[in-house]
Image (cartoon, rainbow over all chains, first blue to last red; front, top):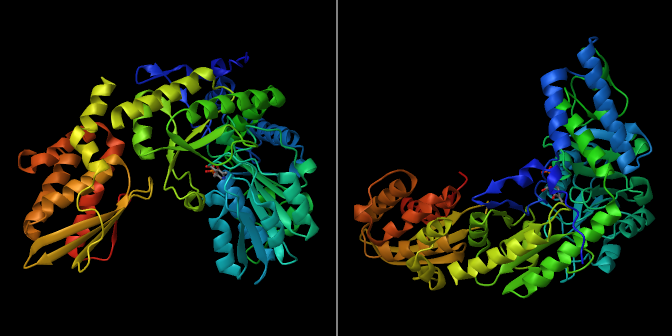
Amino acid sequence: MTTMLNKKVDFPVLNTTMRGNDLVYLDNAATTQKPKSVLETMNHFLTKENGTVNRGVYFLSQEATKKCDDSRKSIQLFLNAASEKEIIFVKGTTEAINLVAYSYGELLKAGDEILITELEHHANIVPWQQLCLRRGCILKVAPITDDGHLDLNEFKKLLSSKTKLVSFCHISNSIGTINPAKEMIKLAKEVGAKVMIDGAQAVSHLKVDVQDLDCDFYAFSGHKCFGPTGIGVLYGKEALLEKMPPFMTGGDMIETVSFQSSSFAELPRKFEAGTPAIVEIIGLGEAIKYMNSLDFTEIQEYEQKLLNLAQEKLGELDVRLIGPTHTKAAIVSFVVNGVHAHDVGTILDMEGIAVRVGHHCTQPLMKRYKVSSTIRASFCFYNNMDDVDALVRGLKKVREFLG
Amino acid sequence: MDNDRLRAMYQEMILEHNKSPRNFGPLEGHTHYGHGKNPLCGDDYEFYLEVKNDVIERVGFTGDGCAISKSSASMLTTMVKGKSIEDARKLSETFLEFILNEGPKESLGKLKIFEGVKQFPVRVKCATLSWRALEQALLKTKHIASTEA
Ligand SMILES: Cc1ncc(COP(=O)(O)O)c(C=O)c1O
């Protein structure tokens, strides 16, 4: 018998009803819900303590500055980064990858190669394509096998002394594949390449240790790990960040400015131009605190049980599961045979079930599987067996309506 | 209640056209061409018309998408075949006015069955996509009709 984690109580939205039913929220890969503690912390700050950071000599500003510093510290510990200087606040994963593509990209030259995988989100494809256009670099793509896992042999073959950067998702947002990150990083290092990991889907599902991984960059979004939108993190190794030119420039990231020239602030502020997303940074700090209260081993076991149950029950229906069946996060992508994903999404919505339908910002991956769109149910530790049952009931209703 | 809304949208005739779309397939020797695409959900259709003396003599379409968009495309082809360009344009205008606003439905014939879609604002685009593509085709422009224009 599976024990329930019963975490729905911590998340106010999950206790609302939707179209007359209990809300069944299965779009966690798009964005996660926020625990009460995050909502209250942000509300408290804005109603009682709002002020800007780094500038004010007055109390509110000092407090806000301290809170943002604390948040940075807790993220450093959360990722096990060596120093707070390695934690850069950005808008989200997309901005983090763009920052690296622009700034680290400045150090690349024509003919240098960037290697990604077939699993990537558009956010981990397009910035590299644009970099290639700007600097004459070459983008290579490591294929996956039919069962949705990276083809490690092909990956190895594509690595060479020309490879300057390897960038891949820790977990695929579309089909849930967990990449063998450590092994991939080791192989990349053997040819002297730097490694960036798109961790957007990973931080809410597994314990991440950037020093153990030995990656050069790691990116994630606050809103996908129980924090607010508009804030995310780029981790980068200090020595590498030091070598990189600033991405955006302006206030807060300078040391001195004259009309002839400017010098830049120390890390991490060299990469944080402009007034930061203060309340979002504080909210993210609280989300990290919430995650620190969880036992990730227990969470992983629980989510795997949800995943197995979902795959087993979906397997009994007339659907085609897309992607891997093991070594994956609790993300299930599928198509209902003979019914378009959009129609499925609408009928599930009428039952109060939120799933994502479409290409999930991974059009090349959809093409690989010869589908234009899939239905994606992405689970979180606050989901339970009832949510799986509701999904299955909803899918039976799809057949009822659409034959 | 929600079931009623669903049934109102997924009418028998809509599902039937979705399963067996009419005039499906490309058209050799077409004189007009239109392309409709919804980048958000991937619906993508191409329309081919053969126009002689201002009359749409033959019409065909290819592509894929949800039940609403596909049945809409299929019914469009049956409705405009044999019509003058002028009349096809008028029909298109009336249909879009009906779906998007509160336009009258009297002259729409069987296209009235798309009324149920109005209950689902995010799905309205699915019903209008092919009509936008038709307008492009009749204008003989090279643009792709997009729901996100
Ligand atoms: C794997 C992956 N990478 C990148 C992103 C982009 O994240 P954001 O939109 O928060 O910048 C997402 C979010 O959809 C994602 O799932």
